[in-house]
Image (cartoon, rainbow over all chains, first blue to last red; front, side):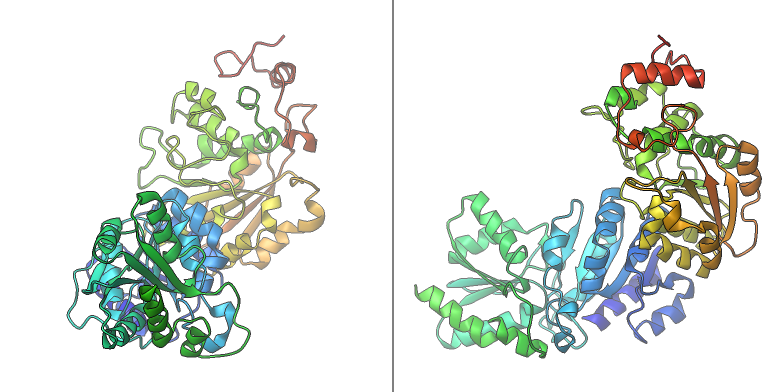
Length: 306
Length: 261
């Protein structure tokens, strides 16, 4: 997703000279092409995220379209108050780009695991929260985000995320993408869990269970029309996210169900309420939190059999 | 305003009144008729809690009618106890939490550099605010980016919300200098000194300017001067009458203003 983001941003910067990229001293070599093409519009703001977000706000107040890049934890947690007071309260077009959603930075440990970012970003007034499901969505999200024109959090995976969409889908912020049809259950995925949802659905299909897959790339505003359709068509919803089950997509969907009066079952897959206590790769850590394709398929099967 | 709104921070506002007068009536290029003109000098009140002085300066300068001042801290009023961007013309950014204004101002100054525009950006900080790390992040950034069109004014009234600041901050000018800024100390109630220090900004090519303005909290009201109580206490009707008498204002025509008893 990281390379796709930079590709999308470079293309955007080519046609929109308001686009400025700020990094908190992260992204060694990956911005070389961008910097060479737009030398005045690349700013390494150093290891100082609070200032970086304030500077981005100042640039946006003056009409620029800043993209602020860092690892998702640092891009959201260290400077949360600047995102709230400066970006969201002033309601300016700053895109916060968090790379390494969930356990992408696996063995780096919990300081680098972004498992609360969706929750805290979606609490902020004026903020839009976008978590692309694969590199194709990530690239499309950049252009869509820029024309959106307000505060936006773009949560990326890492380098080398698998491609799910072999034909580019229509991409609109706030409109979920139905990736696969199905009648028994709906797997509603956000961010990098999309390939896992696909693999789980394949496993379920082998058991004669038909699950539709929704890429809910925008967590806020939530596509409630898509959720209504899921409820109508399947009655059993599953949310998938590499993020705490507290406050993320699962919570957002649960809040909607409780207020909408829809009657459907909801099961939330997400990380447990604890820090990783050992080192481990992204795949290993997913397994520790019940997020491997096999674990998801197993649990879905149990729920559908209840 | 503070009396009618039963609001605090009178001392913090009074310490920066003279700085604001110097900025709005002598130093800054600003036109109330065109509050968003692209060639105007920008101003960020980083010490947002001192906003009554800023609202008053803007109203006096003609950005909006003085009657709007009566909406301060009132239910449904436009003027909150910390300024929002959409409240009245002349507010360039919302502030209220300390340590946010200088980074925003640095971004605005950077934007001017990127577009080769000549206007300046002024940020007014409190002294207690200089304990926020983000102030120094911005100080490093602005010097490294050679933002000589950026001015940080520190209202050094020697009080933060609980304690004296000078024991923590001094030597403050030395710190700004060490961070690459052109730092000058002035009497923050002496117009000539303030104007002389800032009239030629950018003074040294490539260097941002820090003005350490020595001020008195609650300036010109004898019972408020240098008394931390007035960081918290809304003035009563009697306090207001006495204060207006001391500063030689009738208060007539001013929202919340009263004729001296």
